[in-house]
Length: 188
Image (cartoon, rainbow, N blue to C red; front, side, top):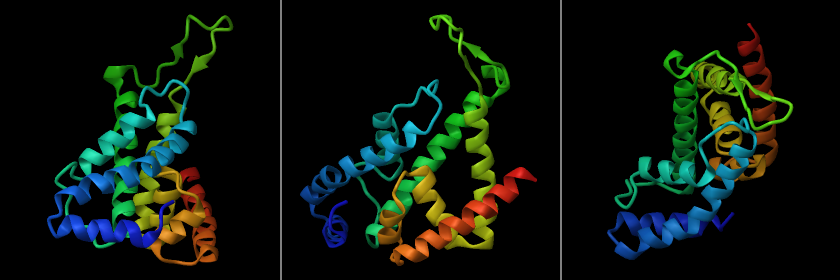
């Protein structure tokens, strides 16, 4: 990831009205956002139609596109990016899981000689984590942010700690607690 001060400085310049700062910001964070999206999409079902580039572009547009809102700092920006990616993935999962799109039905890939089946389990898992995450946010907002950044945006725990301004051991403890909490919530 880039230096924390570099992104914060560009965010401040964008807020001050520097027209070129917005483009420099996009260039600086695009590769990071794409890497995060690629990491996240690698964990999705092979039948997932959303590509990392599309996820980054949609997230950037939802963050304001060329008319970026006021970002307080790097943590604020990446927190919003993680939330945007989460919402996009959840919306995609809901669309795929909808009855009008054959929700609950099993897709047969006729090109696969073994007729491998792509099930809607991945979409259901994203929705279950999303719902449980909303409940965790009420219980402990910081732990929910760690989950958003690690699970939905694909940041490492070290990167999430940097963005959130906490130590790496704190982020690891938050992740361990949140995983256990979410597992219990999803299983019951």
